Image (tube, rainbow, N blue to C red; front, side, top):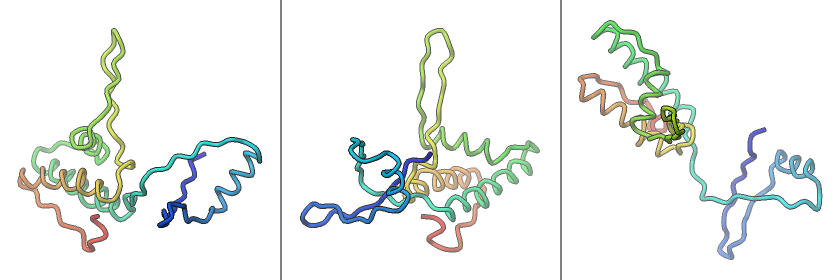
Length: 146
């Protein structure tokens, strides 16, 4: 089960102003009364959006895939480009196991908020390919790009 998330505003009196969504209310009922629970509080960030992901996967990556095919005749997939871009622009965790090759786990693009998604991933990918001579059209609407 995914972790339920709720948003709240901090009032001038430093109290939280929110309504418990039904999903959270049902989860609390499942846990039961008189049980201690953990609550994580962090600053709210606007998640990356479906139009942003659609632009990356529907415009940016397909444009690059075609360009590579036309220039050198090699087939690459959007997934391969995405894995490379995550490692290159978002960083990764390295798990060192004695006697074995290091395991590398790229940071997930789904963990990026709306601004980070465009600035740290989409913009970097487009700039890199523009330097190689490939023009990637900008989104039609501003909200599609961040």
